[in-house]
Length: 356
Length: 267
Image (cartoon, rainbow over all chains, first blue to last red; front, side, top):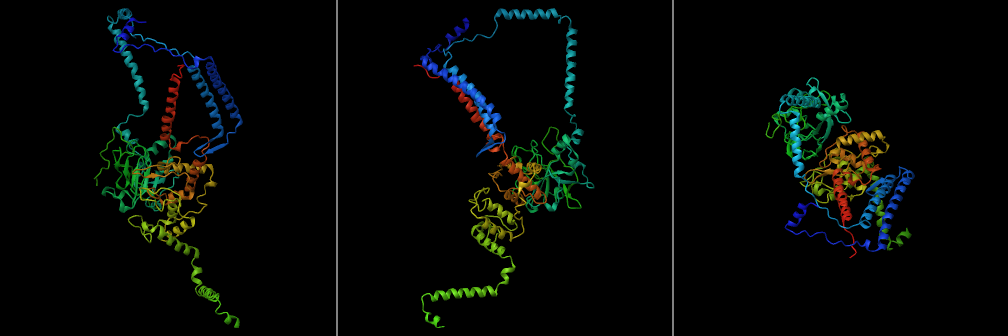
């Protein structure tokens, strides 16, 4: 035992009470009880073995097609019985070990004194002497150039590691952003070559006459069908839109957006301006669109302005019109980037409360 | 004649004559005014009349005597038979008490009464009609069509009604109800009419075929959930987390206390 440690113990504000006297456990006091406890442990292990065998038998004996239905608990009989017996086998091993440790093993209390963690003074001095000897032997102090060249080599070696970060994607310069992040498939539309809005999943073009007041359509640009795989997902993440029809008398349309809508049919980006969740929880009577992620709420009857929640910017609106056959079309891209904020984003053009 | 004249003061004579007279009047009436009854589909006319009577007793205090609406309830002109069948068939109307939203409950009205009221409300103005049984029958769908119904459901419905149709919360105490245990015809009608805050999904955008496939998907997720154990309401991380923290970690704590407890001593 370390002398310092024992001294510290006795010097504390409260005297060390020491180990309380050992009282024999109830089981240890009588050989009969001890025998019974041993029996319980063995019973656990035997039952565990029986369960393991039962699980094996059940695995092969029960067909995987039987279904059980007990109200809220609906399951496959094979899974339930195989899992229950297998779980019971491992659980009984655990219970057996705990019962064994608690009842049959020695429960006499022991004291282990903690030692100071620092090395002795002699060891520490010796280590410092060895270190300074090593520095002197390597000649670092005399041969400065060796050390300098080593530093240069290590520094240059870090460059290839940093360069591989370029594989994470193109540097987001203004031009790159304008061609990727800030551009959707609607950018291919012109007044001469408009792009039809189609129903998501079914690709059915949307006719203005088919939309009723209170209608919500999850839509995509027609040209999304030309994409596949990763490109399809990337384009869909930006071009997803919702088309809603509201009673023109019940909504506010600013002067600058008077020709962005077709008799109460308005089109907005489906991507929340907060962190980019897709939003379609639209209340047709209040015209409020709720984001399920963080409860940002946008008023689609008032240019998509934020009425509640953490989103800072109005939902981007897409200018839509009709083609000769009465289908809804877009003739230009969104006027502002869709989706969540990012550092370089220019937010001066977003629609704000009070804009005309 | 003697037979009749001698019995003219018989106690049964007066009631008998009354019955004869009533029969005569009825017979003559049927002979004189038969044409007007036959020409205009008698069942419908009668249903409209019955429906109007029921409407004025059960609905008019909020929706007005002629369904024109009051400050307590909206106008029913042009809502269509589908709207009445949905609202009354699912027990939402008549509302038990005013509130943000009418909850689903057992309907107090028989199918015949609901048909009568919906037939009457349909005469107030054109609106979505009740679909035929064949339109909303998902039993003939192939697995591919049910999978497509799942795509449609996830794109159009899952935002509010949850990915497996368990429903979800909306602002200010409103909610999207769970779609389990709902009759296919009511799911179809809800899409077409857009009840309460739900948007409309009209016939020309989500076709009848699409609607049937969506119903097929809903029935598949409700009934074919083989292999799972406790679904915990199929609501995802909320109930699963609650279960893991309270039952799972709580159970482990109890076991840990048992393992380290000292146990019975001999004195």
